[in-house]
Image (cartoon, rainbow, N blue to C red; front, top):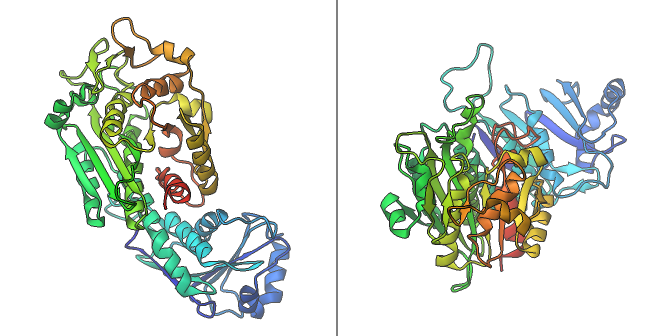
Length: 497
């Protein structure tokens, strides 16, 4: 995607190729847009009336080769009522605009202006973010195009705005976030024969080019640490497990870091408790939590965030080999607690248990947030619109919720409590790795909570949002890279000083 899309920031007086503009209800345009469309004003209003286009939110009017404008196509996108637009809507508008640029086009101009006037530089950068995310496609393994597919090899998009210099400066900060989301999408979309634990660790290590300190732990290292839960999950695979710890020190020296932990099951067969064949190919994405954490670290380092952050990912492949762990096995975690394996398909919580404990004891962070495609039960509860949020800290919940509303990557708090905790008590060990069918997402979170002590902690179950992601104005990919923008916003709003 980065190779085929070029974004530039230009004055309103410069435009070429497909022209995309915005209007509010009643065909109300901004001043620069009205001036640009003056030669076709009467025709435009006639076409709008014929198509019953009034500028309602999400509606579009397209005119091919409009007489009076030396352009191949004019696209008008409705933004709804004049005062309803918020800054968070700019990303969506950018995606919608890019979606209206034909695949054959090599040039396009998007007027960064609404009815109330030109967008601020920060809003133009948000618009550009939407353009970038909508343009993403994961097609690197397609060796030939379908007959009749005459897509352009490269498209240049101009964001026409009032202060192009300031907008470009704002974009240099925002582009790091875009790169982080794209990195997460790429990792999740990769097939498991390409992206196994060692390869994902290698790609995470590339963050060192941005100034990130990266440590990779192999099986021997984790065995010394006593990570029996994590190692038990991967022992049936020919691909050895890994743990990667990434540190960004952009804050004041000596200030305790914030931390993010990701589940990285590069493929999940379910192990001995094997999954049904239908849909198992999607389990290449069971490392979406780890991908988000890597993407987030790329965003923080890329924009030189003024914060100390630790990100850690546990990487395993869950396979049903003769060496694989069995239901009934008991594993000892790094914390010393023991877990009885009831179902080998409840493996992600085992990985996270050891990594959470390691990060907590070594770095003593302000908080820990872990992300995981942990349970199908969360999809039953929340569908694909919200990620499940479990936490021991109301303040962290409030901040995550606000960041979610601001970015559109929304979270919904789910309950925790001693009644649910009893459901994972074991007859033979300190706990068992599943509490049965009922409250499956909650009992998984209860297990994780046993490994965080009193540290403020949040668990995001992203099974519904990270894989088979909803198709939106800014995402047409199987995976949206969910969580990178949410957590970057959390850091920017509350933890950078």
